[in-house]
Image (cartoon, rainbow, N blue to C red; front, top):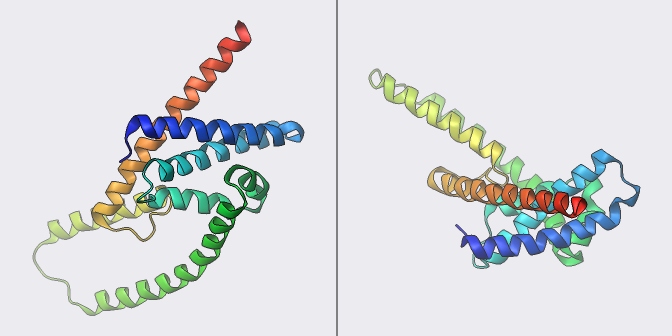
Length: 188
């Protein structure tokens, strides 16, 4: 987890820089494109603030969020402007690396499922098996919701999820503050 004040401060600074970059590019954008640019700048700012507020470890969700946006070709110019050329190149290289890891992971899953099929199911413990299946299904859903959580298991997945949700809450609070500030500046 991040120290809340330090993370909020780093996130607000990154958000203002990225929104300024998105604003410079938004002159020729439609409403939907502007919305996507604000979402992109907010997500990238949150990921960059996460890595800057705790430099020892970068959260898997932060790397996953940047990689997810870097995978889309239409985000390239804005991400280069927000992140800088070298950081963007690292993220783009990570996109290429995830494709080869996914193929290897698929092969491991197939091998593992064959081993499970070879085992015989125990006659007793049906309730425990059902509970275990439900937990596995919910963990699978968490892996799809949290960016970069594909390879995480158990407690590390829960820790990443907790960190990601806390950062999303901070993101919503800061965006609400910006909206209130822009409304009051228009009225005043």
